[in-house]
Image 1 (spheres, rainbow, N blue to C red):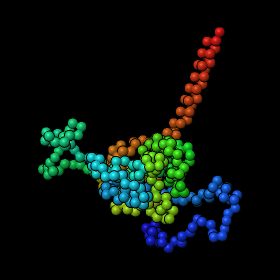
Image 2: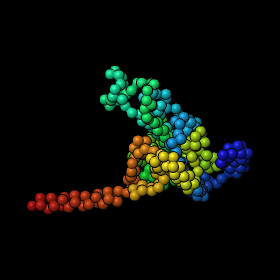
Image 3: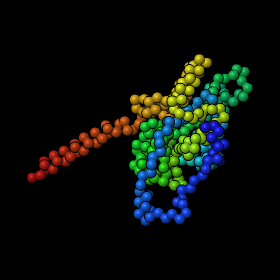
Image 4: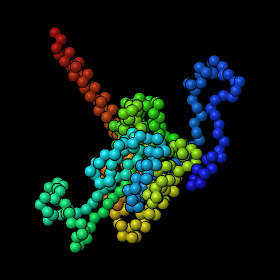
Length: 319
C-alpha cells in the first residue's frame, strides 16, 4: 500500500458513459435507476489503531483529512483549551486532536495569578524543583463500530457498512433527521449547516478501494495512527501494551478493541494511559438498541393499562 499511489497514474481510466452510437431503450432508461447494483465482494475488515503515547499533537492528520476530503476550514479561533483550536469532531472536522494538560496546581502562587476552580496556577517558569506533569494527546475520529447504533437508527438506509466493514454515510440519502446523532454514544456525527445532512469520517473509502492508506494515517509522522486489517492491528497493539508494561507504564491499556456486555468492538480503537473520561470517551459505552426490547415491552404494557383504565371509566360512568 505504501507505493500504490505512485502506480495510480498508470491505471487505465474508464468512463461511465455508454459507447458512441449506443442508445439504450426507453424501458432500460426508465427501470435502470430502480435496479440494485451488484454489491462489492467482502474484503478483510480494516480499521484504525491509535497509540496516544506517541502522538505529538502536530495535527497533520487534521490537515490531511481536510485536504483529501475537501472539507472547509473551521476558522482560526482561540478556544483557550491548550492548543486545541478545532474543539470537537464535526461535519467539517472528521479528525480532532485533543490536548489534555495534566500539571499540578500551586496554592502558593502570587495572589494576583490566574485561577482555575479557586486554585491559583504557578507562574514560576524556572522552578528550583521540576514539577511533575504530562501532556496527553489523542487524535479522535469515528469509531466505526462493528454494531453501529447510528446505522441501526437510520430510517432511510443512508448509513451502511462497506465491504471493509467501515461505517459509511451516503449524504444524498440522508434526510437530516439526526437520529444517528442522538444514538452515537461518542458524539461523533453532526449535521452540516450547508446542506443539513449528517457527515463523518468515511475511513477514506475512496482511497481504500484503490489500495491506498487513509490520508490521516499516511500523514502521521510518528505512526500514532496506524491503519490495516483489524486482526493485525489488535495483535500489534497488544504487543505495544506489553512493551509499555515492561518499561514501567503500568497504566497502558487498550480501549474498544474487544466487545463488552453492552457494546460491540470498535474498528477504530485506542491505546490509553489514563481513564477514558480523561480523553472525553465514555467509560462504558452503551448501545441504545440493547434496551429497546424493554422499552417496547413497557410501552405495550402502558398502552394496555391506559386502555383498561379508559374502559373502566366508560363503564362506571355509563348510566
